[in-house]
Structure formats: C-alpha cells, structure tokens
Length: 169
Image (tube, rainbow, N blue to C red):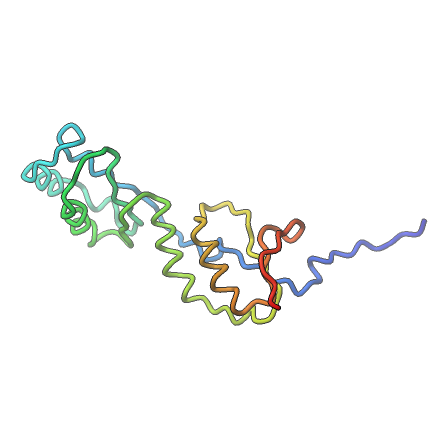
C-alpha cells in the first residue's frame, strides 16, 4: 500500500464560514428584577418605589447591557419599567425589557442588518453552529435570512458535519 497524502478538503474548499460569535458584543450583561422594590415582591407603592429608585446605586451599571424584568406575577403599571429605564439611561449601553437572552437578541438585531454580506455572494456558506458564547437562536434565524439572497448555498453546523439548509436553483 502506497502512502497517500491526506488532503484537507474543507481547508481547500471555497466554503465561507459565517460565525455569529465574530459579531458578539463584548460587555457585561445584567438583569434588574423590579420585584426587589415591591412590597413583598408584589405590590408597588409609588412613593416607596420612587424612593428606592432614587437611593439605588445606578453607577454600577456603567457601560453594561441591562435587562429589566419582574420575577414575580406582580401586576405593574407600564410606567414602572420606564421609570427604571430613566434612572439607567445615563449609565447603561443598552436597556431592554426582558431577560439576558433578550439583550443578545436585541444586539444581534442591531448588528446583523449592518453587516456587508457581499463576501458571501454566490458562495457556499456555512453558518457556524457551535459557539462558546450565548448566541441566541434568533441571531441564527436572522443571519440565515440575510445570507439567503446572496449565498449559493447555506449549511449549518461545522464543516465536517454540516446540515444543508438551502441551495439556490
């Protein structure tokens, strides 16, 4: 048996990898639970609520991405979250209603429409599936929508075990 050179077909292919981690914004992600300022976690007393917000250390959220939510089934007036936002706005990079995952969803919804997809024009593209960062599923869905009009084909996963998703006719 003669020695055959092992050829790395993946490295030699024209396959373009679209890695959503490349667009993951650095920065601290924090959740603020409104229930901490409610009586027994459920009742909003406006005077006490406003006083608690006034005395809170908002500077701790400097340059952070902040999600505002309530962990209890309290029925809150909509102005409560907006008032918290007013206190956060001078410090936070971004404020969203919801949880940490909602922060990343909102960030990708801002970032992905600004990407130049021309590098993927008429090429087979693989949307990298495994990530070390918490890339939300919504980012994969948005990336697929942005790539479909330009790519020749789209796969998902890793080059060695990709799942075909789309092939232009």
